[in-house]
Image (cartoon, rainbow, N blue to C red; front, side):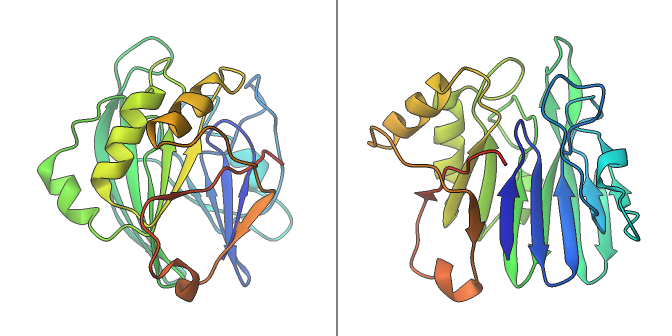
Length: 209
């Protein structure tokens, strides 16, 4: 699997010809817009910063769009969505947490979650997370300290922080919570099932592409 970060909460996850897009940035957002074709687009919160489905509709790929809680099986990718709270944009809203089984790995995408108290039903589905995507920038989502505590409590093998709009201050705080001063970002994460064995809460910083 190859995971690429495109700023805010936008990610591309690809294995073979299958491409997943998480919270793609729309043309109406002030964030950077990146275009590519996706088979599935997962939108955790219907906001201009996360709902750029038009930007992951490219060539022959027209994505199956998932934007609310439920169970989905698309192209052999099993996805579960669970409701959570967000106040992104200054108002209380429903954010969807996604649990995704892709290339024999369990991905958890928290989206624009604000409340670190996750419902027990959701927690049960989030056992044995391999790769966790967690927002750290505050402003209606988790702040860096909350994000670290929640991430550690879910016991993922790999943690990928996202949505730092504070010029790196939130990321610095997030790393300090884990006892690190700094970490060099990577352009993309290329990983296989065997690569995550033995890892426990290892943080990877992805540079926006």
